[in-house]
Amino acid sequence: MAIRRILASISGGSDSGAVASTAFKLAKATDGHVVGCYVRQGVPPYIYFGGIGGNIGMYSGQVAESLIAHNDRTEALAANAFANAREKHAVPSATKKPPETAPSAEWVGDVGGAGAFSTMARLAETVVVTRPTDETGFDSIAVFEAGLLRAKRPMLVVPDALADAPWNSIAIAFNGSGEGARAVTAALPLLRWANHVHILTADAPADEDEGIGAKDLETYLDWHGVKSKRHLAEIKEDTAGDTLLMLADRVGAKLIVMGAYTHSHLREMVMGGVTRHLLEKTKVPLFMVH
Image 1 (tube, rainbow, N blue to C red):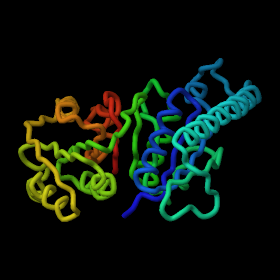
Image 2: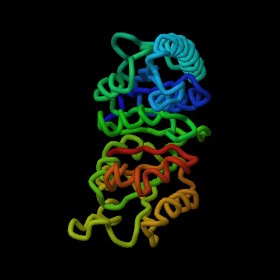
Image 3: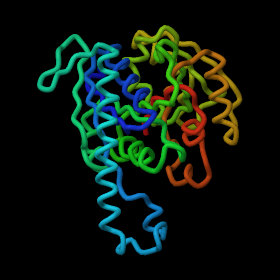
């Protein structure tokens, strides 16, 4: 499957340049079409829990006006960041029919909230978003989860800093899960394009009954013309995130492909987990599928 339609959520914040630039680099690598959009921010949760006097009804008009003005300003910043990145990467506009053998882009503006974004994301091969953390705010988390959990699309998660060619060297964090296998399949266009592909895995697959291990993945990739190198390590549950990041850094990976929330999402939220740890700590982009 080719990566032809790339949906990029541009927040209008300091992360906008990195997200837009990543989307255009991906489009240039795969002859893809970038659809840039702004996801409208909703009422911050703290307001409902007494953040302004404990009674939102008293202030609903002011809150609505403030949010509308804020969204209008932020959308303008997002559009400007997208346009600057498109010009920098010399990607032409195409709003009707994209060219067959060249990257292209269009800006669709405000698409509504996270729910509308998840609907739009269903017809994208890859969704590019900023790294969702407490620092980037509630809305970035909502956008990430809308694409990953509701639309169930491959997500390219971008940290603040970005390597010039993040898909030249790719690490696959593989535990034999269905989510991990789907991530590899979705990432095949990038894996074929990479100069170096590394498989990072424990000594045994997560599910012994299924028996899907690093050797099986190496054989699968070979059938798709992707040469890879296996790196086996003892990966314990309580240190798995740190171990994977250390291994990825050791092999010089500029992008990590992985399954997201291979345990339940609720368990990862409450107990912590590899997905959450990598989202919080990674310095390289993550290509994730749930």
